[in-house]
Image (cartoon, rainbow, N blue to C red):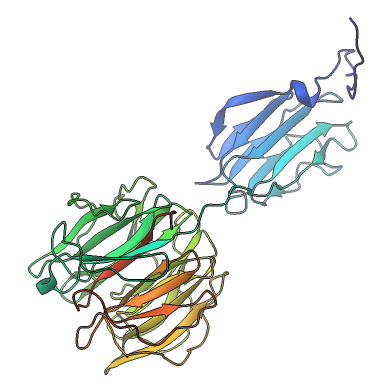
Amino acid sequence: MSGTIVDNLTRTSGTIAPTSGGLSWSSDVITASTATVSAGNGYWINTTSNACTVTLPSSAEIGDKIVLADYARTWSTNNLIINSNGLNFQGSPDTYTVDYSTAGQSLSIVYSDATKGWIPISDDAVTDAPEQPPTQKGIFGFGTLAAGSVTNLVSSSGVVATDTAGVGTTRYNLAAAGYGGDKAIFGFGHTGSAYVSITNLVSNSGVVATDTSGVGTARYQPAAAIYGLDKAIFGYGEISSGAVTSLTNLVNNSGVVAADVTGVGSARDGPSAVKYGTDKAIFGYGNTGSLTAVTNLVSNVGVVATDTSGVGTVRTMLGSASYGTDKAIFGYGNLSSGYTAITNLVSNTGVVAADVSGVGTTRGYITACSYGGDKAIFGYGSSPATAITNLVSSSGVVASDTTGVGTARDSLAAAGYSFSA
């Protein structure tokens, strides 16, 4: 045999340990909460749904190597836990807790000897290099029954188009969110005679599809937002006269709505929801029987957190949208008496700021969406019903009224769509 053997360690048995280049990778992605691994192998560990405890071999020889990699960049949400199975890990016995909690991390360990045991030779986090393009366009849709189910597209420069003939069941007090990265979904609402859970998908060219049979509890005045880059969540709302809920329904990246998830946080109707921090979401404000400003954060895997004490003026039927690529804004809404134009900015860690003085016409039953990659637009609302809009800059500054385009109405929904300007 010709050539030079480089960086190979000799086992105590006299055999040559495999190099990292010869590592055998498992073809199965581990999603379970426990897994047992063996030397000479690499494993993809997906902790999207749960933490994973990995049990190392109970015996090892010098030079044995194992590599574990974060398959879905979720170790920061659900940790990787190492059970060293009676052997030492970096010189500590297996009674110590060893966990890894950095998104995108890969862990390469090699067995040294009985004293130090398994030693990491690298535990680097790889940058999430591919970045999803920003949403460029928006769509306002449905609302006041007399208006039908019309929609209005928003260009990448924030210009609202005239009415597009409605598709799907006419209804009001529905919600909308992006999904799949560049598409959107309208869902739930009230037809004037019944609560519904039907949905309508929106293509990446802004075309609204016919009704999809409803999944989950029919309700109106819910809210919806993107989470995890390409999925969505509907939550909260009124399920019958005077009866409010905190149920949620997740939407996968192909627009399929899942069954009800038991609610977390204060049951209420009329909240608003929005993406923040690139892959998480926040529900905020609403009416529990009295107006509130509580918020509920949503993780990048769609888990809703308990109530966070409210900041800012209590109100309901407000709008919200992302701006500046990773921040958000709540704005306008119904007070206990009258309407407001105040706004509250949301940081990229989900912290809601104090009130900012309102700009533009005060109104409630309003909606908002992102456009142009890093800007937002509030539009429509009452009272009386209007079509005016207010643009929001990439730094969260709300502009004065823009003359309305399309049918004046309230109680509609809006969402961003399309990667293309």
